[in-house]
Image (cartoon, chains in turn brown, cyan):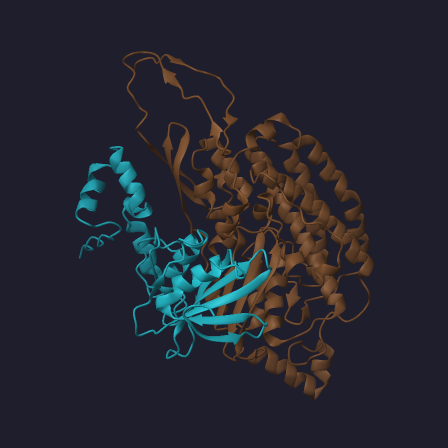
Length: 424
Length: 199
């Protein structure tokens, strides 16, 4: 094997007017060096690769180290949830929603319950509304913590990962207190909740909201002005506002590109319009701005959690409607009418009127839509999940084009995908 | 008036639904996107609905949103199941439709004319059991589990790559001879028959 003499021009890649990095190509000096400029290499990344955040497979065409084309392959985690939903009662679908975006199960439960309630025309109780807001914002925090941790590991920072997962663990403890499960919470029911929060939950959550900003500030101090972090993320994978809109991006991905759209503000559900919080908007639409948006969103979620705790009043968590809410076990065993309702609900399910309903909620990953079509039976004709990370991921080939292979890892991490949701 | 509008309706959730004729879908979509006062610049979702009543047409549903006006609209195209299941692709208007239309194609078998890269997306490209979200598709799939496992184990390596990727490898001269030979014979993804068991 002949020894190569290659002169390396160690210039730091800059950024041109379009936001794409410019770089100096490596030039070979020896005469007999073959010209490899037109030879492209096909590299397969994944599906079992830690930096693809799940079973995502990317086939990348490389020119040297530059990505010419990136072709994602999905479906390794396809479980057919939408098909399964057509064979289940509305309340039986809720456990399926846990398993789609499994990093924010509670928010998925809420999203589905809201769609089913809209379809059936059910108004939930005030206490249930506040508890669901708590569920959504806790989910946002744990999802962003996982994102922060894994992305920082992808880019070589290990410490923020440990801090982020420690905070996530505290929320998981709260979820376990509330539902008995850490991951597969299934906390909502159509018309209410599986259970009220237990004693001590409010105090523990208040303690969390008091101390959580401290951890955020530490992560902020370690990463935001870190030269390595900024160098790996600034100007990488940038999308303009028009491109982000045209690719149907949502959530932090859309806002990082400077589009101030937040479902919580613009199409409010669960009374979000009455909470005091800010919509976080980025400017450049690159990986760095997506990081800033998600970090700041954690502060805003924390603010909302503080407000919910002040608003939490005693009251029923379930609507007073024996057709949709199961009677208590004691009543079902002693009262004839309650037993009939119990039997009918378990055996026949809750019938939804003919029609359709779509509810989009602001999930940590973006807009999670639940579209239900009913033909009057207890099982939906069609249950469609609008998967935010699936749609955000569809912009990956565009974002990765022209970047280095190592930047592809950063860009892929910045999309914040969960394969359970992408493949459903 | 939206061009091609067949009829309008209001869904249970108060959302406006407009039924559009299949032939004028692209025209209506362009009108909705570009007309001042409409400006539906954001494609929220594309999906399809097949009803349990097999006589009812299959609906392709588009969720549009105007980010400026904060307004939503739902556009539906009805396709008769006896007819050809095809509509025009809206990819030229919204690039976000790329994967969404691929998913509808994958799950329902509806062809989007003019889509740049209409391949299966969640199921693998050589999947032969049909379209999973159609009502005629059984919940457990068409093939037995044993048959599915046999096919997965026997699939040729080129079945895991798209034709585009194979052509890149071919151009680089990286393709092994046996794969090139199978591709020449059009055998991509064909499952070889198991060897006859010895008596």
